[in-house]
Length: 373
Image (cartoon, rainbow, N blue to C red; front, side, top):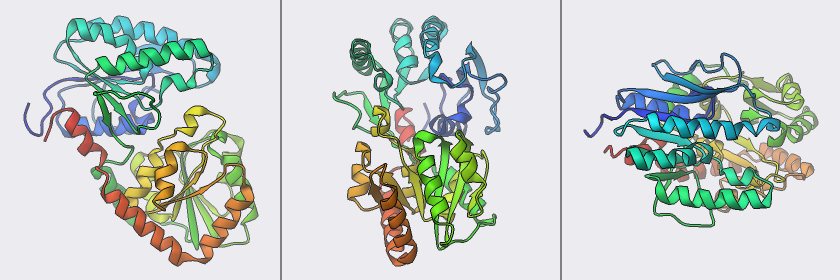
């Protein structure tokens, strides 16, 4: 293998319609293209009709759809069993020299047996720990045991943070959720060439804009601050009534469902990014948000709820404002205070940028996994 060229075909097994729908996989696909990967294949679950088209990628990605339908509702989780069965049998079609990037336990575990028999390289990208989504205690124990086994037997167990794990593994490989350097450069160019609404303080909301991400809270805040020079930039999927209402406010600039580069460009026009996660969900309490890495790399602050265990570091290093999820009055008071004390905001943003310099960009970390210098 040469220093900069990847000679193996890479198969990405992910229960998603398209790679573009998941920031982590989008960045991976860009890296593979840049390193001249001979063939990129996505083994997919097409959730909605026609959704498998890669609108954000301008290079070819081979598609093999193993499952269709189901949408994104939690009421059809039984389909994950069917996905795992389909993935298990597909694994025996993979060639020895291929590299397989499996998103989630539901993709990596079914591939274990075939990877050991056929000898292909299996990378387990554990972006969201599957067992944390299971409520049944017996089933959760079984899945946690199998997660441990999978971690020990794959080539690399790629994780965004250590906080979610009560075990150690020699195969752990930390890839924090930060942008690729090329995406950062493109985002800065987009920012420089776009008109942005100007406010004394601007708060960014992006990604999957759902109720569990604090949209009801920020809508209440937005309404209560209409007489202040405080604005919001939104980008992403409007997945609840509150998000739709918020996008129509006069002090909100809604960009739509945009590319990763366009969403990242909006950080340069912002002072803080809002990252609330409803702590009633265990997986939310261990969130490893892409938005935190985006904020550190673009030099803006973070607003996060204190219940998020994995946010302790960014709160302790004073690049994030930590408040309790349901304390709306405290959040409102803090936002008003920050809008009136911009010198403190500037200091925090400089601190964030300095901390971001110490974190390798996404593509630099991925190079090590594929043994590229």
